[in-house]
View 1 (cartoon, rainbow, N blue to C red):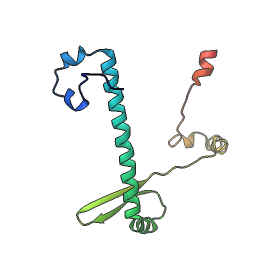
View 2 (view 1 turned 30 degrees about the vertical axis):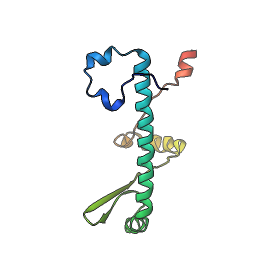
View 3 (view 1 turned 90 degrees about the vertical axis):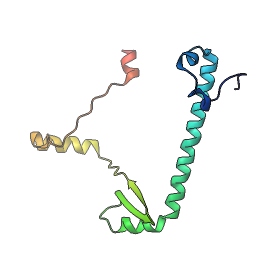
View 4 (view 1 turned 135 degrees about the horizontal axis):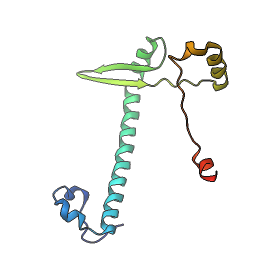
Length: 128
């Protein structure tokens, strides 16, 4: 949506805050929408470029991961004076029922690596 006489995002950095505060809600909303659209486009561009880097250096990345014990963590690929760091996070899935049993058996001996997370189902709370 374009509103006549609306400054662009690029130009508002040169406008005093007091003048921006005088903009109508419609103008501010339009600027926010424009910024969100630009952010989404930039995020798509970043993802696209990551895909290109992954393809360009695929063989080197595979080789570096093959030298590691597991295929997680960071590896580095050097291209001339540029170092590309690829990080594959470790995503461990734990069987929650088995964990409960193990922590019960270990008792207080497991306290140094046990992590308890409490949460509330907001819908259930609202309906209570």
